[in-house]
Image 1 (cartoon, rainbow, N blue to C red):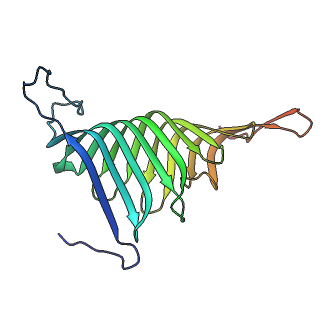
Image 2: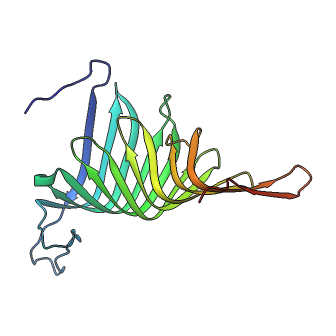
Image 3: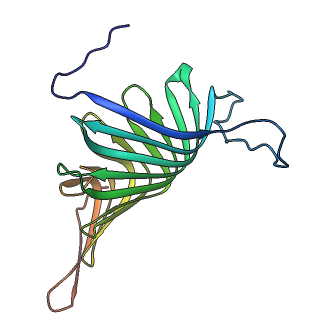
Length: 195
């Protein structure tokens, strides 16, 4: 196996977690972290899982999970109760993603978020869907599902979506509909006509 590092983009991971102890004692029942179906057992189970991605010492994002199961054979971390804070180039939090669960690839650091996925920016834009992917190297959020974006009273919906994590530049792929509030308080509605 060869590892390749870009000289301008050296990344580090910091994981702070409490490892579950699967055994009786101290009057507490053992706790289990749900894993994927199919009976595969995780290599490690963790509660209060935290991992941070940095670029030249600046945080790019931090993932928090209520619990996580680590599967080394497939380079995956399956997390439940997920929150991801994204940071801008100055290190300030710019948006937060929440989801019921997520799968994190341990090599590429890409993530798939599923279940009540919401991305809320500090500027007030809100995106919601049932599933999306975060592509770490490209710093892109993509989804082929139905997506709703709300900003300052305007609502855009469509199927298929691509954006930066701060929702500054986003694009819908098809079935786009818009409800826009005018300055006088009226509502304009439109759609793209694609099926």
